Image (cartoon, rainbow, N blue to C red; front, top):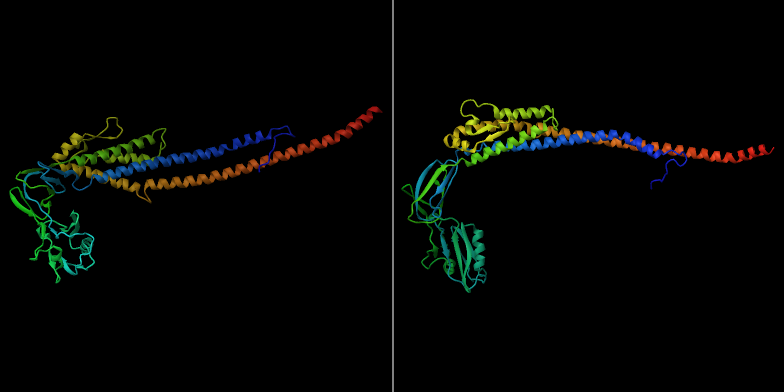
Length: 441
């Protein structure tokens, strides 16, 4: 428990106020350390924010070098309910006529009706599905057969369909469409597949839906495929056949520069944000005012965009110009950019992917973990914080010791003054008596 003291009872000196004032003056050193630490925190926050913005520029620059970005196309179908079309890498502009004669279908085989899905069938034996053997015991039910067929991994899906109470069917469906993927059933010696109704007495599958190939005409040529999704008829073009009919569907493949516009816009936005952050931080009253490394980063960023390309297109020709306020920020004219991509996608790609690669190389070096500028600055700030924290703790310990020492000395003074007062009081009585006796004589 802290000892209660009253300042100056004996000495009539308010020494506690004196100690408090002395410590207030001494603590000015602590305030200076705290101010230095606060500046380190501000510097660290500024560089951390800059690092995040530069990483965004790096990411956006990398997005400009995606293969096919500037030569993208989109496909349009005149009848999406019949045919849907998607253009991918390798697609070329043009129009194509397509008519769907028939769709591909999966082979389905159905059993005869059974009274229960879960009751034992009482069948013993085996049969084959696409070469995989299914073995039944008398305890197995239709529901058990679903599990057995699935476990056989025969390229067939099994399910029990209930048509009505007491009317249950086992349906086998080929996993893939097309005649080449038709279900092949072979009965065993005990003819359990025939007893189930999956095979007719003649040994043929009890087909519910026959396997079928897609048949369609593309630009006058009749083609067949085993599936309704066709990605090998024309380079870069994927067709989804939805329905058959006599209508001729017109599929148009047209240049689609929108993805490249979005990518360039993303880089412009990230680049401008990084420059604004640097400009504010390097201002006269900014956190990084006079920081040589930050100045070099700002200068290099601007050089990478401002330098003229050797031959070929220039940035202004593809709609990328610099702000009139001389801030160095970029301005994107989307219309001019889209026109440039439509007329010269290879030239635009060469120009922008070259700038993007240079930007990636520069940012990769300063953001690289370990020896990159930003991670190195982060480590420096951590070390400075730790050093200042140690200095602050030592200073606080020293001031606490100094305050205790001053308090002890003033308390000793109080005890001394109090002792002198008691001695004075003790001497006062005999002196008074002595002085009184001298007076009477």
